[in-house]
Length: 270
Image (cartoon, rainbow, N blue to C red; front, side, top):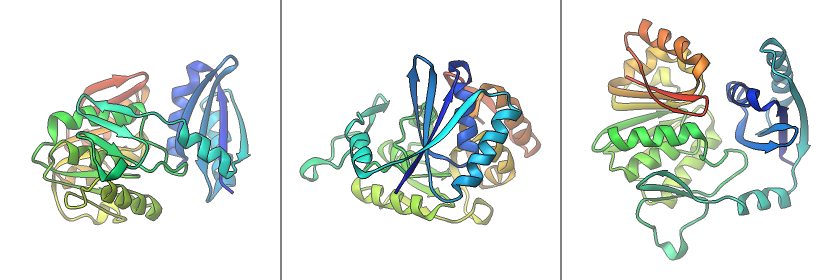
């Protein structure tokens, strides 16, 4: 049975707590405002006990007042979660739709997904910023999406007329889901996916995008610069983490600038 991790925090701690959950490898982050604060929900299965211990320890170190508990989910809960999802307009011309296309008819600009709790949906602020950036920079270009998850940004690039979009993720189940989504949207001729670690990628790309977390982005800076022959865009970064990412990429030979902000999240490009 799937398990859902719940984290209750003060409203002004929500963005920092969300970033921490991302860094620790939790999936499918959902934020809900309540009278007693904000409740963040995230799914996890493998290594849950270890991740919970890391979460509590890191929360204490960062002085985040968190209340953490775990709920087991039945099939009815997951069905209700999927039924409640609404389409998300990522860019003026690209819309994320949480269902399969009807009668094999694909609406222009629509990206169809079969939502799964384990992978989330793709409606986070960082996804919207990355999609808006791609709308200006990926047409007729080759693209690499580092940490592709279910492939949303590759699918966005395909809808925005990228020449090729390749996504990599170390999680095999995510790559399987991304491949299924490419088939669902009839873009398998443009989008490809693999579990190849970034350090083993030998091809280069016109555009590299990564929506991960600040710590991982800093660790991958040299390899991201190595595979990029043109523009890069990075998000999953809080405002307070911006400088550390900029320093890591500056040391790797690439100067970044601030391109977008939504809430406390930023997108850097170079």
